[in-house]
Image 1 (cartoon, rainbow, N blue to C red):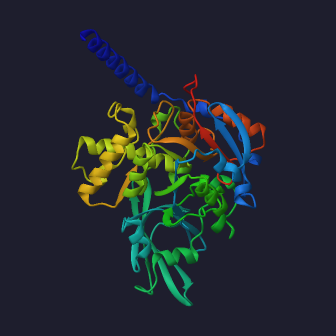
Image 2 (image 1 turned 60 degrees about the horizontal axis):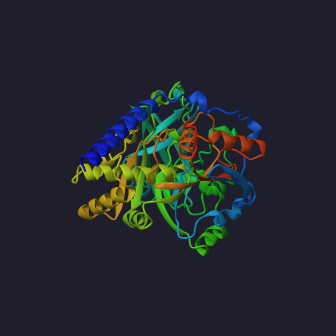
Length: 436
């Protein structure tokens, strides 16, 4: 008996040392190792005419094949749970022209006052946003004015620059016809959809439809969860018919998703914060499926994996506030919770929500997933093809246990289309020797 105890203790110590070693090495991941040749002609500037006729790469435990996206349901296991991000892209670009003729662009990043997304879009008098400002040198003082027409009536929209707030700019908006017109209506009337900068074109009327998923519901993103752009009502119906359950959560995608990694190692990159909302019954369904799910898109991945770490926080501090559930960038790489299953963590989160009388969890995450990360909830992933040297490519590499280059070489050799409007992949990880 004593011998078995010594062996168990020795195994635990070896495991602890190994995990701490891996955690230290994560910060030394060189971004240059995650580069590949992506020329402009490989970037899809527009989607295919019918969403589900895009190409689908299937990576199944080291074996690669291809099909049409419309065939996706046939590759999914009966009885699995598939999770979608139902965020909706807002028309976040606003343009003003000064009396001098100078054009000023205000790019809405996230609501400041009110800070709640739903309240923000419903407000009918004044609001403040954290923004990026284009041609800011031409806007040194004074308010910007724009006359717009809504509901057959004209109103004056005013923008006033309050000052810097972190890496963003704080801008206050006010408008006439107060109590009659909401900020959501103003954006719908004059805002422009923020399509990705790498498309190298202006947004078009068609983007208002094609750059939204067919299941988008909750306004708040400034970029689409692009893996979902391939789904059609027909594909969703096939998923249902094949006995695969569907669930939705919300993560509002920020402009930081396009931020390049400029540091030599990933330790020098600051991940952006994203806001999430997950209903308790979705977490309960995850538990019923053994704490595992098929994620549609990297945004769903970051939300699902963050739920695990929020569960760990609740286990360590049962009375923790909703705000403090925020997952910090490198938090997953300490040793906490290494032996806690996804079901245990999610059950703790549900119990906490019950104690707080919460039906929806509202929090935020800064999680970064890089090679060496251990996935807890996601076991299959539907995702597009991402930019070289990006955090999203690192996430994919971590998921397929280092075999990302095999996948991307195949996609390049077989004329797959890349990035937001490009083709898709279904990733089912298997054992791999490489850890890059």
